[in-house]
Length: 251
Ligand SMILES: C[S@@+](CC[C@H](N)C(=O)[O-])C[C@H]1O[C@@H](n2cnc3c(N)ncnc32)[C@H](O)[C@@H]1O
Image 1 (cartoon, helix red, strand yellow):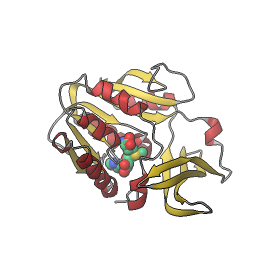
Image 2 (cartoon, helix red, strand yellow; image 1 turned 135 degrees about the vertical axis):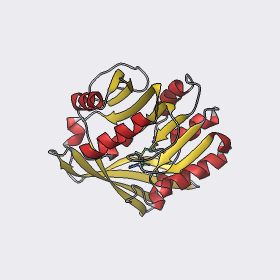
Image 3 (tube, rainbow, N blue to C red; image 1 turned 45 degrees about the horizontal axis):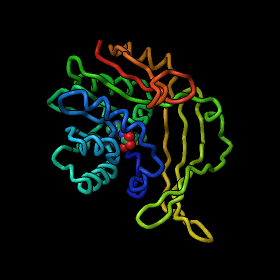
Image 4 (cartoon, rainbow, N blue to C red; image 1 turned 90 degrees about the horizontal axis):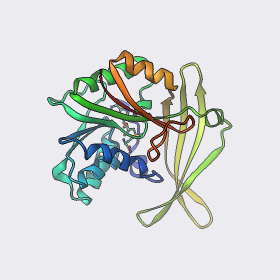
C-alpha cells in the first residue's frame, strides 16, 4: 500500500501546523463520554492532545512512518494508557466497536481521490459510528487564487525549530487536474544554514478538492445529516474562502 509520507517527511510533518483546529476538535471530544476515533491520525497531533486531557482515543492511519512518530509523541506526552494506534486503511478497517465521535482533522478526506474511495470511507465510518454519534472533518475551501497558482514557484511556509536545527518548509504547486479536481503539491524541508540550505526531505502530495455543494450532496447520498458547516475553527460561521468544517450525524 502506498504511504503518503516517507520516514523523514513524517518527522517534520507537524512543523508550521496551527493549533486552533486541535482545540476545536477537543471541545467536541470533551462533551462525549467515551472513546474518540481519529481516522488518518498522522503523527498524533490531535490524538495526543486529546489523550493528554484524559480522552481515550483510537488513532488509525495507513502510514507506518506517521504511526511511529505518533508513538514517540505519545511516549513523551505520557499518555500511553489513553491512546491506541492502529495501522489500517480508512476504506476497510474493522474495529468491533462504535464511537460517539469520529474525526478526520486536517484535510484527511482530501486524500481520497476517487468517488469510489470517498464513498467507501464514508460507508466504513458510518458502520463505526454510534447511533447519535458525530462525524466531524475539515477540507479546504477551493480558493481560485490558490488553485490557479501553478507557476512552479517555491513558496515559503516558514522556518521552524526542530531538534536544535532550523528547518525551512516550502511548497510548490506542481499540477492541477481541473476535471478530476486534483492538485499535486511538493513539500520540501531544508536544514537552514548560514550560507546555504540543505534539502533533507521532500514529499509529493495529491489532494482532491471539493466544492461545498458537492460535499453536501455526497454526505447526503451516504445518509449523513449535516448539522453544521463552519469556515474556521474559531468564529464558527460560514464564509466562503477558508475551510469547510462539516459536523454530521447519521440520518
Ligand atoms: C494531512 S494528514 C492529517 C493528519 C492528522 N489528522 C493531523 O491533523 O495532523 C492525512 C493523514 O491521512 C492518512 N491517510 C491517507 N490515506 C489513508 C488511508 N487510506 N487510510 C488511513 N489513513 C490514510 C495519511 O497517512 C496522513 O497521515
